[in-house]
Length: 90
Image (cartoon, rainbow, N blue to C red; front, side, top):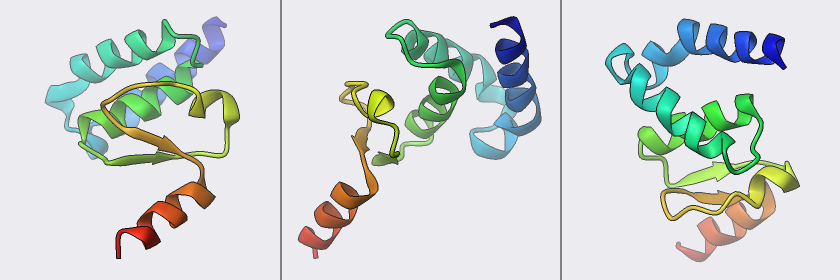
């Protein structure tokens, strides 16, 4: 588990500034910790936190466990449902 945490911290160190800006690092880390408290793995939590904080409307995944994460901050969908919803909006 410690190796995974180090891997994610390394990912955040290398890429947070590209996704959400270095100044938002503490916010990303805090949000990722909140998401992990629901049972989501650390890497997935970091990705979802970044998507939420950059105001994405959708988080698209094929991971059924991750798709069960419930929040009103972002719409968690699989690729097929995303395409159906997106096409329905046209």
